[in-house]
Each structure stands twice: as structure tokens, then as C-alpha cells.
Image 1 (cartoon, helix red, strand yellow):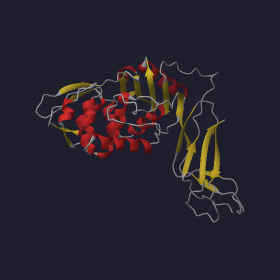
Image 2 (cartoon, one colour):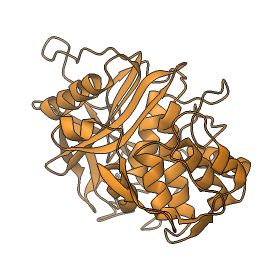
Image 3 (cartoon, one colour):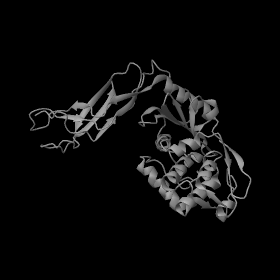
Image 4 (cartoon, helix red, strand yellow):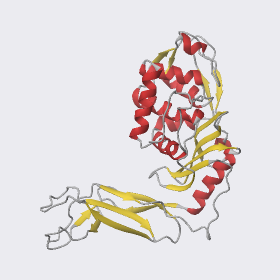
Length: 338
């Protein structure tokens, strides 16, 4: 029996992103020890070099710091600056007066633009009560996002041998962070007047110079500690399509990121692989007198190159048995280039 408009697929998966052959496309020349170019919408990797090399992420750590804060605490929350935070002077600091009560919104700009390490500690205490509790929340969120080679020991990213991530994991974290409207607004801001009650407002400058150097650049975060070298997680959008570039231990981080982004925009484009409700015929199920027909419950997007032929493969769940109820999960459809 053919199930017309039959059971919906619970999920649709995509294989590795289609890519041109090396003969037809020159890959970007990079100075970075590790790099990833990722489609922000789907997470497809379009280019990688040592993508799973564990490396100190330095201040790109603050992407997760900001994400956790935004997900857990209202922007108008007043954060009281503790004595230890006010006295903190390691690395890049903004300088926060003890006992001052500063809105989380202001702190997030001070966190992401001039990369205040003292601000990272203030955010952690304001959101979770203690830095240790906040760091545990950061690690839990990383696990939820599939960043399984990431471990944080601080909200600021100053060097610690047990504080590490990978280019791939940072891409995963960044693409989710860029789904948050407030995060996007903060990281594309070039200057911000930072207000502390009782003090004159002062101008904060975004350390990410890619914002003024690359057309369409709209984030995200620079980082540096001696043990890590220069690191950058970058975002750019052309015609509504966003790419994420990550470079670790680079001697030319803006050049590397620019070359990665240009490579991606020049050789790939987003495509709708399946419309919501589109039907796919499955393999015959044992005991059935006809093949099943499954539909995808939501649109499936991918990234392709000109001339790619995208095919699909349907796989039924191993435990699937008759009768099959309409609307239940019956398997997956995977898309791949040939």
C-alpha cells in the first residue's frame, strides 16, 4: 500500500558540503595553523585546516560568555561590581569601579568591543553569582551545541592549559550566537559610549578591524594571548547569506579571514534542497505491499557550487515496523554531491 502524503520525516541530514575539485578551485592561502569556513545557517563546513586541533581560544572565549549571559539574564539587570573585579588588572581591562551598579547591556558592549577581562568576571558574577558557576554553565552550553572538544576554565580566556577549543567548535558556538539579535547588534558595533552611574561616559572601540576592512563584515571577536597567538572568529553577510570564518594562531588574522570569506562567497551559494512537505519515496519495508512515502516537516537548506548535482539517499529507521502511523518518524533523508 502506498501511503500518499505519508509519514513525516523527523529529520533530514546533509553530508559534507559539496566542493569544487582542487583542479578547478584554488583554496585560500592562509597563515593560520587551524581554520574553518562554515555556513552560518546549516553549519556546513566549506573549508577546514586542522579544524579539530585543540588550541587556546583566548578572548574568542567571550563569544560563549556573551551567549550564556544573553540567554539567562535580562539586559536591564543591574550588576554590582565586586572588589575582586574592580581590582582585576590582567590583560585587557576596562576598569570598573567597586560597588558600581551597571546594566548588563552596558557590560556586554564592554565585554565584546574592547574585550574587557574584568568585565567578563563581572558578567559571570552578575549572571550566575560566582565565576565557577558561570563557567560550568558555559561548558554545559558548549556540550549542548556539539562543541565536544571545548573546555572553559574562565569567562575571559586568559591562558590556562585546561582552557581550550577548536576552530570547528568555535564556529559552532559563533553560528548560534549570531542567531541572537542582541548579540549581532553588539558585535557589529564599531564604537559605544559606555555609561557608569556617577561617571562621565567614555567611548569604547571595537578591536575587530575586519568590520571596516571587509565588505559585509558584521562580527564577531578577536583574541590574543602569547600561548595562542592571534585568533579571530569572523562573520560576513552578502545578499542575506552569512558565513563564519575562524582562524587560530595566525600571523595575518584579518587577511586570513578575508581570504576565507572571499573564497566562500565566490565559489558557493545557498540552495533549498527540499521544501517543507516535499515527498521522498523510501525503500520497501518488509511486509508492506508498496514503498512508503515520507515527507520532510520543514525546509532543508544546503550550500552548493555551480555545476554540482545534488542527490539524496533515504534511510528507514532500523526499528520501523508495520503499521506505520501518519506523522510518525520513519527515517532520514541525506543530501550529497556526486
